[in-house]
Image: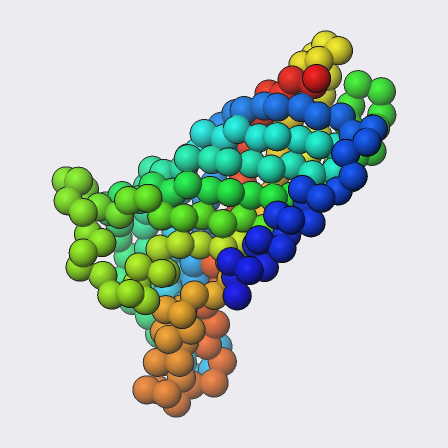
Length: 220
């Protein structure tokens, strides 16, 4: 279902009429902290177990005024976990991950001289390329099918960007985008486990992502 939704979004973006639309290409880097929480709010069982991941990425993109398509290669640079309430434990994650990301964002520019501001809305698919321990040993053969599916991530995204013109053709684009991850089967199984095993009702497992990117583009 997630893949179908993403393909529909791609199709809608690529079929916008091209007449009178300005085309540009660009690239840049981004930093993306991801936070995943297992949160229980039942009375007497309140607690949160939180995973923190930090990713860095190299991006290339195609912009067509109202649509921005981004391809990126991203990798985890660090990871940690902590807990509060009914949960306990804290530490570091040493496993390594790399991803190939595809993001389609709809945008609408508001132009103020050499400055353009635009809201963004769309979806991103991050497909796992590798998952290893700190020594580089492949961990994928040890995972179940559901765990392998869980490595791939799908986000609904919304944010804000700006273009600052440096010349007629060249501009700098800072972008800030918030992403909310669609639940995987493993996410749902974990929530169901806590509900059925401990008799809980208010269990959530939200995962959010913040992209902070600096891009440089060239207008044709």
